[in-house]
Length: 338
Ligand SMILES: [Zn+2]
Image (cartoon, rainbow, N blue to C red):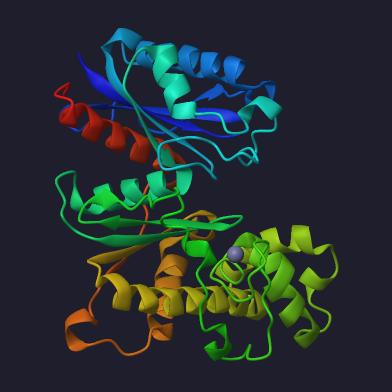
């Protein structure tokens, strides 16, 4: 048996999946191993290797059966997998600064390793789930979590960019002044920009920008009683139950995304949009309403582009590992290994 592995490295856990040559995922759901990233590269790379052995054993195989490994990590990192000199998000150890994690892992395992940042890996999974592996289509993914990550898949391939910042869609500026009912909001992003996608379409945006804007307009609302950090996490559940303030918050997020998607329609003329992340971990009815709201915010399209579909990304919690595995399969096929 031969297969490739997807290794999604986070600050605390490594999430694995295995994909065979018939493109069947051999591990459904999460298979995790502790990352120990705070203890530095040597220990963390050993953890990745140990976890890979356990993952292979889980399907009755051995790590020798893994022909290539796809790695994804949080950014910032170069397109080839060298972590930023400032160190990667969540990897708090001085030796991570400027560390070439792709090369380090390839050396450790003695196998070819491909690299994507975690948002681009998730975007590749979303694209694959819709179009399959031999796709020549173009899709734009937006993943609404604590921040807003995403990715552009162009003609079936991830746009990584010259410096690894391809698909940093959360920091693209949008014409937020045109969102109905919030014309005087000033949404600030952690990156220093005012009015980019993440400043309105993320959990952080709810806490820092949208709730502070709306709460004074809903005096006595229960979300105004605790601290904003906790309140922001309650908004999704309340919105799903129909709370008017919370629905307004999600309407603003959907409209921000609609304005952004319109920019992408005119940049890429894509085959599909894909939305994922914690914001969409809700029932189908709420997802459908959210997608309707995105569409409602998109200015009228040319006739040919009016029907571009908007999908919800499946298997959200394993998206990074699955996307990393798909990239590894491409690498293995290019190298004649699969
Ligand atoms: Zn930003």
